[in-house]
Image (cartoon, rainbow, N blue to C red; front, side, top):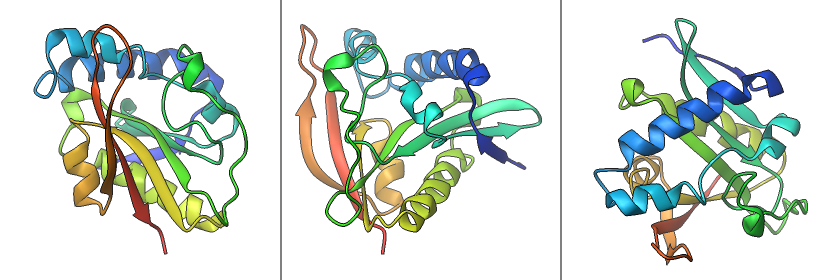
Length: 176
């Protein structure tokens, strides 16, 4: 399949949000209970700061949104606009900090076709170009196999706070 990619703009937000909702609902179910899938929506979602920073990518196939994801020079590790307690807009120091790989989602119709690998390769290269020697992310259990296959290793396992904890894995990779 031929994929194209481009930087997301504000006009893409409705399509990105719809893709995220669909992806969370369809792809997390093999790894989480139904209650955990619903609870995960509180910590997953679009951080529009990534779009404003020009570091959020859309992957398309025949004009259809197949996936998305971004990277960041900011301290926020995960979460969307609605998860304000997780947000930290402070800029990272590439000499000592790891770039953040953020908000990766694949449309369920396009899984296992290279969308995630494409997003990672584009943003790992961008982070290296910006001077970062390392990247980190907060991965879902559904995303862990892809990230491991791409060289990311677990750093720590956490559970999100709340009535229904959701397991997640902080993962990292050297980019040099």
